[in-house]
Every structure is written in structure tokens, then in C-alpha cells.
Image 1 (cartoon, rainbow, N blue to C red):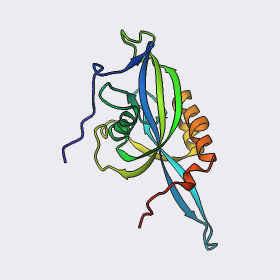
Image 2 (image 1 turned 30 degrees about the horizontal axis):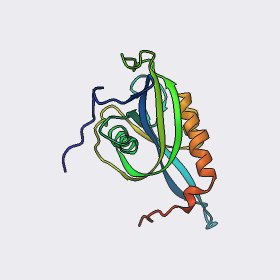
Image 3 (image 1 turned 90 degrees about the horizontal axis):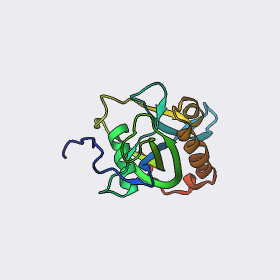
Length: 180
């Protein structure tokens, strides 16, 4: 298998009506917890966040959607590059608009971005990944993630997109491979 390398540069970047198009995901897993002695188990959701390279707080993996890929491929690529995880995209969570202070260029001088966010069920955590020297992964409960989230638009994707979808019972009915 060839070594994974993060894409860099903007020559393949997609823009639409002055917005840089971004693809990202909220990686998650379901974990069973057992109450001591009672035999009761509860399934809790944990989401994977990564540290920001430009300040405090945690992020979900995201980055530019490029011309040679679908938005789903871009979201999965960012999950591999930034967080070192692979899995299945289960649900489109919505579009989230934000303004980037660091990503201003001639196609978007104000740094306007439009992010397409997805729920990604993590199936594999890679031992090495392109940005591992820059990023640390953290598995968090939803309340912890809300508290640590660096950007309001990501918090909104978690609370309004992911939790609304999860609350509909969709995660519990999906076909997941049981781990041994």
C-alpha cells in the first residue's frame, strides 16, 4: 500500500458564488457501557475531534472540496488526512456557512466558506496518517464535544445536524458489523 500524503494547494479548489466549498464530517462510534453488576448496558455515542493547528479548541475534520472528487470523496479524504480514520458516510447533515480569517484568496476575498458536513461511522483508526505530526485525536461524548468545539458553525453541525439525525433513531437501525 502506498503512503498516504495530504493534498496541498488551491489549484483544484472548488468555488461557488464567492464561497470556497468545504467538505467535512463528524466521525463517530457507538460504545457499549455496562453498569457494574446490574447487567444493564447503555450505548453511548462518541465523536472524534482533532486539535486545531491555529489555536485552542477542537475541530471536526474538514477541508477544501476539489474539482476531481465528489463531495463525499472529499469528506472521506479529509477524515483520513486530518484524523486518520476510515468509515462509512451515513448521512448528510447540512450546509454550514462561515467566514475564514486564514483562507482568503482572490476567488473568495472575504474568506467565505460553505461546508457540506456528513456523519461518518468510523470503522478503522489508522496507526499512521498524513497529518499525525500536527494532529491529536480525541474521542469525546457529545456534551464534551459541544464544550470543546472551536467554531460555532461546527457546534451547530453537531447540535442541529448530528443530534437531530441521531435523535430520529437512524443510528440504532443501521446495519453495523459487530466487533469481536
